[in-house]
Image (cartoon, rainbow, N blue to C red):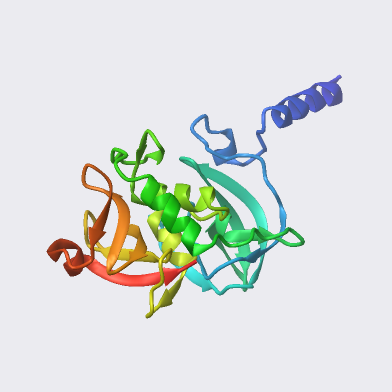
Length: 226
């Protein structure tokens, strides 16, 4: 009878996702989700962090093409972070920056399509955390435009910064990053549309702004390409 009772307790624990000695899994506030274990490849240069979320420190930079082993995952807000092992270290990486080995990578969106779509969305109210046409924040705007144009990008500004490559000769459709706006470091992003102008979700609404604007000129950091 003792063996039967113990089996029922273990089975019940597993059914509800609890494992012996795992305080996080047994916590009601846990954001853990089902695990997609396996070998992945970094689709871009990826910051591996000490915890799930961009507020955690960077443990190492995994260059594009690096193979990583995913051993767990966690949902933080609307983002999914993978617990990975790479180069003998363990950390966390944003899932959208990794590609499952053997998976087909989406074809990059054409710049003209990106610019056209971005301009068509001007006038939509600014909303912190917004990702839809009901309201956008800066990174939500960029993610939405690129998704509509056929390319998946990270949700947050730092993720978009990490997955893009710096360029000195910007072309329409490239990203333009700014620093030290509402926080220190990279903190704002828009889409370059040519003629020294960019479109972004900022102020009261999404709009086209000149890079010669005194405020944005003082906050400019770099142009980058996805």
